[in-house]
Length: 234
Length: 347
Image (tube, rainbow over all chains, first blue to last red; front, side, top):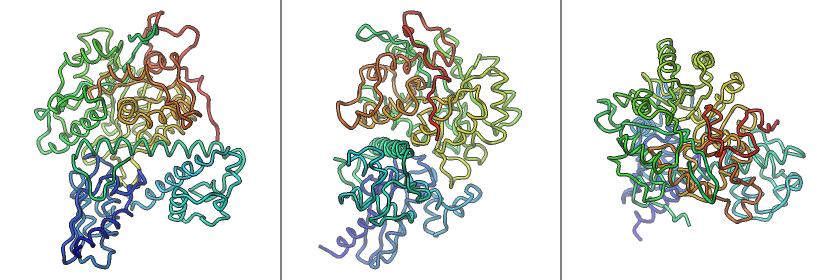
């Protein structure tokens, strides 16, 4: 294995940590990385693509910026060039990310602020969806789920994922932490509210999954090539 | 009318189009947007059964004959509701205007309902045009696309002060039905453009208007459903749900249907084919045949029977638009789609 090949797999691993904030899935497995080229000297070029020309520019910006940050943080990388193709705001997004300018500066007059709150809102949805995923496998009723703590649950990939999302929001992940919490405030969900909360959690998961299904279908129509780091959906 | 197993369905296609997106209609200098828009629509068509796909060339500009055949002769539709989308910054004559729709519809009396549209950024001139369209075309509904670009603006919200003037004008002009379609751009761009909370506010403030959220708020089904449980005058427009998921993603379709039946209910869901994105034939036939997969995962969801399908495919929209339904196609006992029937969830 040459150094460049080994480095490319490290770059792809870094890109695996970049998620579509709406779909809560890595941009690699979604097929959004159209190419990833690493030179022997450590210059990286990543090209990104999205399911449509009009995908929301705020989420697109987050993905390009996050990809840039993830790749350029690797110690062996000398330069990182991350470019979004085929999008109505490609030029603004690419220039803004390359200049590390932030969203508001990249879209002068069109944005009132940065995207931190947007990211937070969608992390809350990811926590809701992840809660449904964990609860569903337990086969328990709402009242029983409402008294569980994270430590009561058997270890699973879904639970680890939920804890990672909770940690990103600064929410408790210790074993004594309640399983059902409001992702916005961290407040435990108890008693009669649990049933409605679990309904929302399931609904949120269904919404994200349906969007992901549509996005995958649209991307496949738009591009007939497999993305770098993309896996079969199974 | 569609008949299956002795059951007869009155079909209202409550969300369909007659557009011209061919290069002859592209605004010079905005060709990339006009092209990007129609190619995006065309990609949605790929989610339908392969035998119903069209070439991009036909998709850009289908004919009157195509529409009449696909929607009425083969598509089982009794009444179709035109929903205009203007996009005049990209398309010279507009993408799909009230005038273009009506020019076709007026040749076929009784088969079409001509909705119009408005854009709050057009001020007094827009209000005057709305009034003219209502008088000229008898519009009882409007289609609102909140993400339309206009003179540097990337969109608007229903809660904008100017939008409220237009909603008030709708009430005065006898418009009952407000079809809302959220799109990907809006000001400011750092906020979630698909957020439906402005519909929530407007629906509370205008209780006599019906708000049909097209594409069930996709990609924000969860926000839409949660709002719809609390607002008796909010409906789920099913365009894209059936077309985009039923064939391509049947399990997700079943889950989305389950959630809609649970949160919104079969009295407040209205079928729309989104033609020319998808032909109605396979959607109507597939929906009548559809049931939840026989799987524990779906066991919690409310069931959907023949009566519910009749409501969703036509009777609910017929009620919203006062469309006369032949007696033999009505439900025997139940009354479909009344706002006050809605079961409200209170937090």
